[in-house]
Image 1 (cartoon, rainbow, N blue to C red):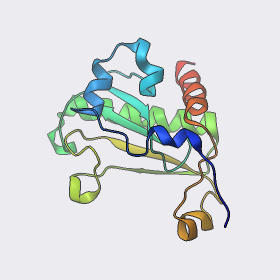
Image 2 (cartoon, rainbow, N blue to C red; image 1 turned 180 degrees about the vertical axis):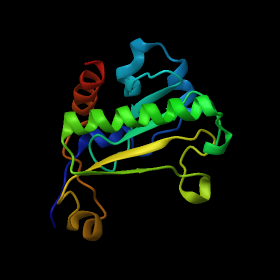
Image 3 (cartoon, rainbow, N blue to C red; image 1 turned 90 degrees about the vertical axis):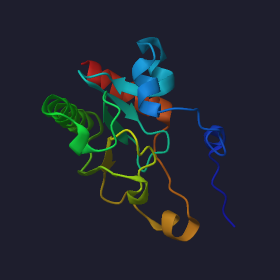
Length: 161
């Protein structure tokens, strides 16, 4: 049997979730805590953070400041700000990581897979040819090629430039 060691994952396995909304906590936190909170950009009316449980390196979550559960609950200005943040996120990921494609989507409601159903957000997952292999199918293991801290440093610098 082969073993894949990823000791940095222990802080996530079985960790207790803090009370309240992740996005609201991050939005209210001072920018000095951005690295800890994995915030890569604070656009007008929202926040862009790295997913702590990514499907691929560079997996971002783009959220509006408004604590609402659906895109239909956003007003026109909030919708525009969210789409602007999403467009810039795609552009930054393209230039910083050079993916060959993206999965971008919204899970609306718990039954649709929303882990945070009360605060709508868009997942942006960079994709590369060959980034899927036998590991998830046979070993129920996804190999992420870049540490979260390295992803944060690279993307924060890209958003800042």
